[in-house]
Length: 258
Image 1: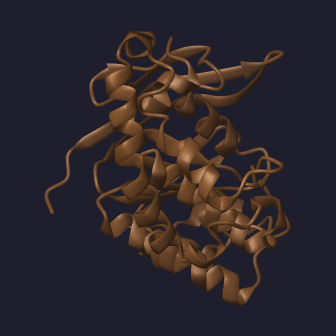
Image 2: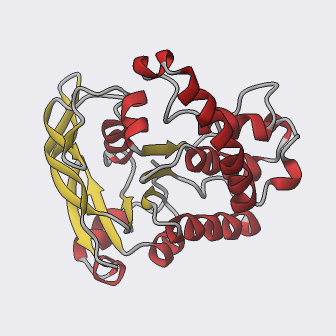
């Protein structure tokens, strides 16, 4: 597969109260790849995710997705462009079933654009199309048997799976997966890994923030190491594993968490 640039960060910085959480980060992410962001506590990983997803704005620099500058766009608009994220903590709404969660997510590409409020036929068509998409996501995630179960009643591991499913229902081009393996046991982690591989096989570009290095090294084509808001290592998993900066900064803080 010939990949092309999808996302560019050009000297992106973000400060909080005079403290730089991200410092002049520049990188290019290729379409179709799996990239992991790793690093010790306070490295800037989650801040970088929040910047890309539009939940916070850069203090300086530019974020460009498919030639579109994202700096002034809000999270909903960025999601409709195709950047979806899952969260470290589960995000389920009380009283809604698994299917209802996926159905709500499936309408995200349409609902919310003012022009579409005047095109009821288009929204109705989107609702019709979303039924097949929800069924496909239920099969992808292995949650078909739980479709009518209240999402809040699912075990924690399945709630994490549902989070990836909700992102998939919204038709992502780029999936930002924030610690998908956090809190999972061995069997749940294996299931999550299979799901992420299946998502990637469907042509979705993936960026992981993850602390389980075994999962990172198995899944990733590229690993970027952050420390104090700066990129200190960047390359293939085998290259990064042998990078002295990685050994010193990341493995030197084994108890760190995001």
